[in-house]
View 1 (tube, rainbow, N blue to C red):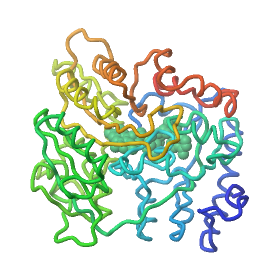
View 2 (spheres, rainbow, N blue to C red):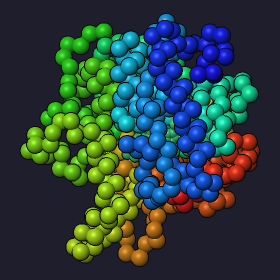
View 3 (cartoon, protein in one colour):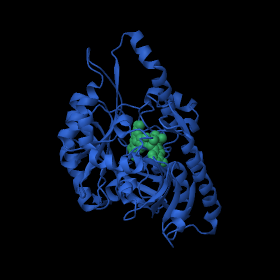
View 4 (cartoon, rainbow, N blue to C red):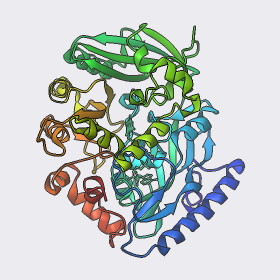
Length: 472
Ligand SMILES: Cc1cc2nc3c(=O)[nH]c(=O)nc-3n(C[C@H](O)[C@H](O)[C@H](O)COP(=O)(O)OP(=O)(O)OC[C@H]3O[C@@H](n4cnc5c(N)ncnc54)[C@H](O)[C@@H]3O)c2cc1C
């Protein structure tokens, strides 16, 4: 792999144990490059992956597919340098297992097991370490990318392809595909000690987030991890987690207990680090509810190995492709439903305004809260967040009954307007309704046009607007 070998002794450089995996990787890179070149110009390209966490279902089966199964491997972990070289389509489940074996984890591990490193970097990821460690792309040291124009290049900060390194986050596979990434890791303790703090207004909750951002702890509890849940405007929780070498007990939320419900229970909890990382996966946050899996009887019958976010996501994808629930709904004469499945980032001082707007206009509950802040001073042109600013990611995933005669996107459009009015941003993994002008104003059209010209001049990959808004 030339990009690693070229550089003398980069942090992720393989030792002898990593060499066979790297040789296989190099062969896979050559193969995918050929396969890409063989796709006729003008034919849409998409990744053939067994899993996805996107929430846009149109077009998933169209176009030529690129087999990327060879890129779901951790190529090398360097425990001394605390780095890993990782195939671009490696799921975080595989990545975390490989690094936890060395007492290390990626700086940010998104909550769903089948989110991949490349997906989280090109599509933005967050988790409860994001207040400390920013977003997954901020701990990428270099990336090997198959560009839209068919080259394989190495993008690293300060290098020849620095602009692509900076513009890759939020490009959603429209400039190229990451084939391998060298990432930083951090040491872990065996357990996480959780404390759940209740707040009776969004204002109090957001004030506590700001305090934790300033002090790194809350009520004497170190905030190695921080996220929260709003059940209603007078019932919000922040869960503050600290690495711990000891655990007086260990909870298990892969069995009969359900993590999000535990937040309202005893104020203190302990999980192994692995169980902590996947605490939201078993019930896809709370989205397993419509499948009945939270009913104790159904839960007992539902095999444990199928209590996973990717299983529920596949069931939803089937439903959306075949319009099963929409037809049943129509037959019952019930109101049509709109999918309201989004993650938005709001500056912390406007967070309470957004939560009040959301409760009044959309009314879906629960809602996930995840504070974040850029890790460094570098900014990322396609997703303009301000260095030093604390944001709160608000995540909501469900359907809401449409009022009679409402336009498609009735709720989503109001959310887009509120996010803009409050100085926030919206992730693009789900539906979007922006006009081209609004979209490019928010996601830096001029910079994107330069990157598209330099790395995919013939437009072999879809354009970001066409992909994320028009669903192509
Ligand atoms: C209910 C729900 C909750 C979510 N919650 C969170 C959350 O809490 N935290 C979080 O971080 N994210 C969350 N996400 C969003 C998720 O991280 C993004 O959708 C992410 O892009 C999914 O990545 P994936 O690996 O599954 O990729 P896919 O779904 O397969 O692909 C996503 C996009 O990235 C592109 N892509 C995939 N791999 C690469 C690559 N190697 N190089 C370049 N482009 C690539 C694809 O072309 C596609 O456009 C959530 C999504 C849903 C639906």
